[in-house]
Length: 47
Image (cartoon, rainbow, N blue to C red; front, side, top):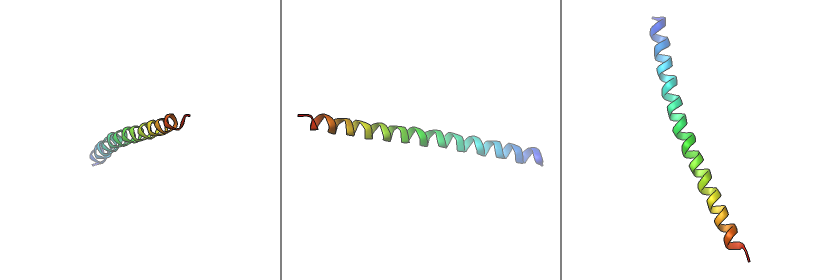
């Protein structure tokens, strides 16, 4: 019984870690896009 619970917990932890990686990757892309927007606005503001 304990072995089954341990295996279930490990499978759930693996699933959460994969989901977290996708979320962090998406967050990184959002930050990059925001940085590019700021960079573009700075270029347009140059005299």
